[in-house]
Image (cartoon, rainbow, N blue to C red; front, side, top):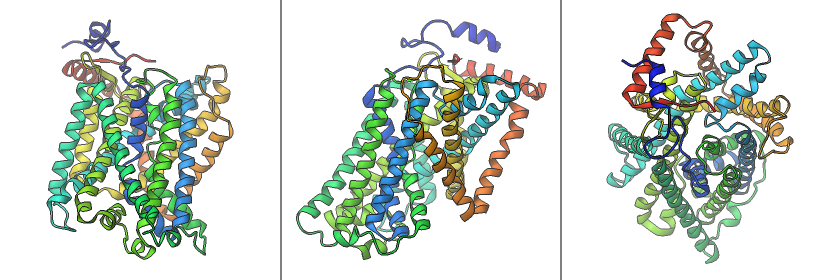
Length: 501
């Protein structure tokens, strides 16, 4: 069997079979492709479910709109901060690499480098091993649930095994596209995001028809700000909105595959405000059709279904499930793309086995990274219900957002001489540090056990790092196993390890 070094020497020279440079991701993403990825990553099932969760907290349509607007501005500030990070560090690893670079303090002391690596490995552990596979499972099970709805009696769900099989089928379809064509990945996202946008415009038009035809008698009552303002409930409502806006950082995972650097700020400054506008207008459409008593009676149901039923009748029982399934399918596609790039970049930087940075010599896609995500996804899919795990680790996401924004401020001093194509106003990342710290701390007070459980699992990453990753403490047997694994995986999947940026 060939050694790891011989595989690198034999395969890494020249171009791949489709004209791209070996060991590097192919630049297939134009401005429309990037906008599609950002828009498609953010818009999932949240706009169909979160409105009722937010309304139940604030009990006011007017306050609900304020929640959507405030959290949208926060998402936009986060995206703008990531534009600077992407222009400074053009790496598909996003938070993983930003944290490692910032908290290594340019390796001024040996322990700084270790500190940065430990923090970034804990992010890899959280994202790759738990959060992203769990997220893919939830999203694809939701897609499967809504796809199967038209084939079962009203208010009856398909059996779990049917949903699991459908979710697995959807995942395999997405994985095959990601394996065989980088261009196909972008085109699929363009199609799905365009259909999502059409679906959202359709909902807005339905609301406008009601509103301007004079049939919306309850719009004033629905949009009233209410008598009592409860800051705690307002903040809790923001958590549901944050979930709906999740994906605002997607461009950070695309920086190596965009055709031109200028597309990154353009894509963010078009896509994120577009999502904010769509979310607010969709909510106004909901409130234009449904009276307050009807909204109160919905509980945790998706608000889009009763909304559409009231406007277009029984045909909504088919149309809305298809729209929700389409949205979640697109979000799952984005999650698969983002996760494979996270694994790929982490392996390239030495935080995971080097073979996971392998790119296929013909298709130039990260097949080993995709297969690792597929394996963990399968385990989560077998468990079926993992909602509590997602809730716990949503807190963890914001820990790493906090570290990323803090890292941006640190790099203003440690990397001040390095060129940036885009520089954000200093107050914005500072404000995002405060907001992300608050998002982490508040659930710790409200749900201490759930938060402590997520932090405990994160802390497990520290001994794993020193046993499996850090050269000075890693046992020889682990190194030998890693070398053999690198050789076997790269040879089996005809891949070359990625070049360091």
